[in-house]
Length: 252
Ligand code: AMP
Image (tube, rainbow, N blue to C red; front, side, top):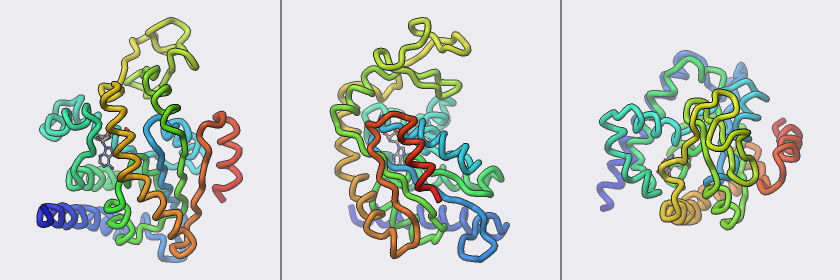
């Protein structure tokens, strides 16, 4: 078991090191020199805490793209790639995916030039192990934004959530219904429920959050001043506008 864990870590480290070396060789994301102008933001929070919504705001604010490991995995599932087929069941169940798969996906994505001026990591790191692996790379994190929402709010948000897969627009049956039931407001295409937005999976995802992701965000909170980034704690039950105002204040 321990050997398997170490192998995952080594493979992950290798993949991420090669991605970051590539970026650094191209001079695009080296926060350790004085010419750096890139911004790296880590966005954390339980499912349905608003990472997509507030990630969009931060993305516009800094003009940097969001990199969501969940989205990357869903694209693989939808395209029925070998990787997609290997993770589909685990995702549907609400289980976390092995580190080496996540690191390999990130490595591939970070090679794209659009991430040259920085990026927002949404859904990564998800465990203390992923956080420490990322830390070893000295990527130059500027902000960690931690969205906090109680479990009962997560459950209610997820059970009513419907999405427009092509655009990522999200709706809620009660709090943000579409103009015409079941259809996207802009394209009138059908809305769907995410495969993992079912009651059993929600339970598991919340459990994974509390047991594996919360320790990572607590670690970031503890390390912020030592590592030189800003840790922003957000009460994500507040309205979108109030949170945008808080973020504008603190993302400096
Ligand atoms: P999300 O869209 O962030 O809610 O992620 C959806 C699912 O993708 C999760 O429930 C996990 O199965 C998987 N996933 C996303 N990011 C990670 C990660 N960093 N580590 C492990 N599994 C992940």
